[in-house]
Length: 465
Image (cartoon, rainbow, N blue to C red):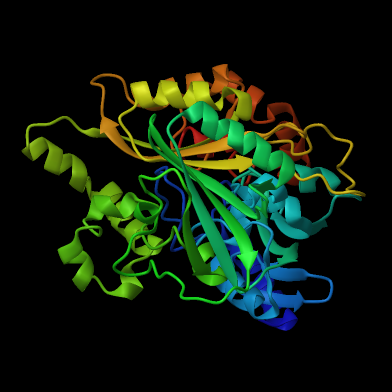
């Protein structure tokens, strides 16, 4: 999209803001979402973001991109790859937007060296609750908003434009899948790879893992490559996460185009497509390739939320409803084995995704002196975390809504971890404020949303408004 098109989109956004009656909460009028928590409905008009979906400009020399806030990573990657560049972190699902990954956090296999998506921001334009579009950067008048915007989930405003750094890539990613029979050994390997960025004499540019059981887990080590040879295709019959598994001590090798590596999890929404029968060989053969993608599964989930289909099926078969346990949590590396063993003993969900993470350390960064640079998600600089992702359902506990999620929240807190807020949360308000920058958020709300036009973070994340 052009700069002119971007400004026209901002104009429509501002017009729609003015059309929301005083006293009514301001929301986005989005047709899609990657949130997994249900929200109360509204018949009021929302903000028109239809003109903020494209890439505004790419500067290959400076390795930067100016991107409208509602641009999906699918469209962003399609624009950057021809230049041999990608965003520093590309979240796993194609329809995640850049603005969404910043305000709601995102992570992927480059996060052990590049941190989270918001750490590659150079500046951003934000429509605040006061109805103004301001430009925030690490220094200057709105530096507080720059630091507080990540993990704010629209409680401070909505990103209309973001300028981000890009990094060079090669045409392919060469993969080595290592099997571990002991979780402690796997996590020791994670620590060494994060520190050295290499393993067995080869560089590691991408790092994540999968736990199937306490005795079977894997690390997937990726290296940028231009090597020749046939590449694997996991967009139709073959399933990526099953390709990781093997029975021998030596690593299993694979080769993907960079494009296909970035979207390797999207075809099957990691492994969640099995809930819709999409991994049944007979059904998969007739399921159109273009519909094997996370956005289709998300629409099926939305229908289930709306009509309670799964609970009706459970009731018809004489079983209680299911509790949704869809979470990503960050655990300090030295406590991750403890969390995984507790989880595997207590929660009947597998597989589990692992994604190591460290906040970026860049010379000359204006935020470099801050031990916890991001106000609303206070991870510590210099600490290695492991994102643990688990996405399924468990039998509900009668009379205890969210029983399993509450136990997970308690376990994460006891181990010094943090939980992402894209799904169900059950914290009391005092605990929530302590974990998610309550004092800083209150100051930011007073400055950028003085009339409380936007819902506060607790109302969004816990009260599901």
